[in-house]
Image 1 (tube, rainbow, N blue to C red):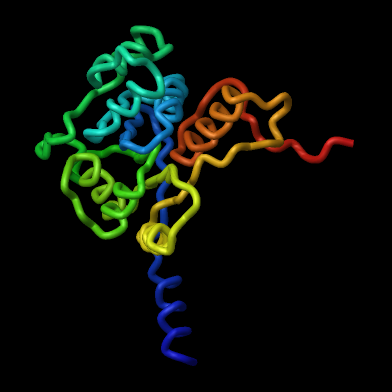
Image 2: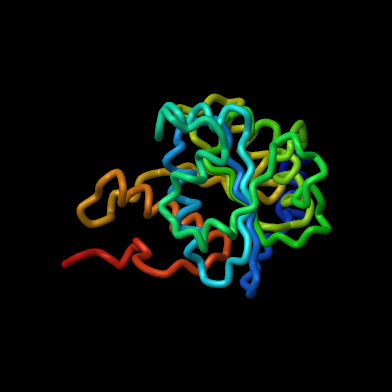
Length: 227
């Protein structure tokens, strides 16, 4: 067997397994980077807050994420708290959000001993992907992702870039080998009467299921070819 083939086999043997945690009191981390796609982050949080058994949603923004939201959602957004105030969610659901400053390196989610179930970075910029893929933890978002990988917990990266350069592809490969799921927000064109809203919902609900969340309502799953 060639050295290249042996290395590939070894990578497959030692590839970490993802543990899906479905339990009462489930906690997840949502990281929002500065990539375009602020609507994806907002809608994912709204949908995740409806999950049965979710007790806490840890939310952390990169420095550029609020600026992107100001340009793509509402020009009046000036802070992470302003972002949260515009969520279409009841006050009881918003109380389950724990907001972390991205420079808060001593936050609970910076440690693997804190028992969150999973994490998603939505949207995930190329810079954030590169940092995660190469173990560079310069802020809380990146550190939380690094912790998620080392603890063998599900990590979803909603990589928001197109077309891909070879650097992007290599970073996606490295992150995937470390245990992350690379899930670009590709539209589910099979959705009946597709619209921007329904396509965003379909993606966010699928991503939530990948994290082990139980989401009520329309699932937007493929139901087979219509006759």
